[in-house]
Picture 1: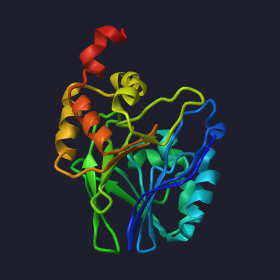
Picture 2: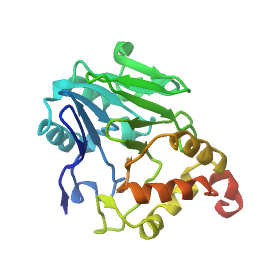
Picture 3: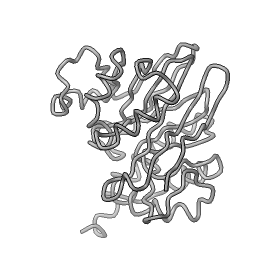
Length: 253
């Protein structure tokens, strides 16, 4: 099944897209979502993924913006399904700056990146990305969820929280969808992943407290489905109270 690019938000100067993907392409590998923000013809790519999906993502981006107008590439963390295509994107988008946790900058040579001049290390406290319209994307720490150095990103114009692996869902074969509209059903696809990949309830609670100060219309994760406002609210409450990782070591062992 093929899923077309979705426009999650659009106004005169600012757009937020969930890029399309095909189920066949991802048989036997981790399913990944990519997102593109376009602000006054300047592109911001969010977790563009590895070499396996590069051609498809490039084609989707090219339908929306000239690839050399991509000026920012944001990585939540260092996993290969997030960052292993970085050399390809840096060659296609020669002016783009790459944002990644300062903890992972020294790992980038293992992905073929030796020139650090275009790398923007994100401090543990987070930061922001300024856009041509004057808006600022907020980089929100999400450490240990699941990566040691991890950040999420909030778009205050679209009111969309890009959450990376937080909010991930694992679909059964042939059962994928792009928008989650029923939390009680969708959480069944999220629970096992979050209990195993998230460190502890303490860090879940810390992140929920940090993002809850923002108005959120969608949560957009790197795996699974985008959560609408109602599902997002229920997810945050569920995640805030989740026992996971070291909280349930006896279950894991």
